[in-house]
Image (tube, rainbow, N blue to C red; front, top):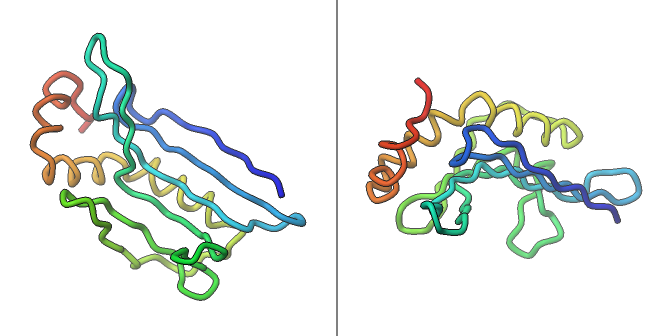
Length: 135
């Protein structure tokens, strides 16, 4: 089994996209594409990245999803720490799903982050006054 992982900064230093893809015998066996928000850094603090939205396909995991059966979905992290599932996506073949998820986050990260910030006033006050998201 092979594993590829990488990150792309969408709005430094507060928003990034993290991609992890696992393959076995030339086929995608699992993936997780996350939009992450940095809760931590002040001038002397460590980064504190937490996911705010993610697409995943983990059929071998007991609580995992199999997009071949369930279709593509996105989990949105809400303030109480639970995920809200959003399923209004077109049918996407497994091989194309990681690219679709990355493109979705690249195009929609501002909208997703704005929703997240509405739910988390403490984060909104600390970051958006200093580094506002582009409009």
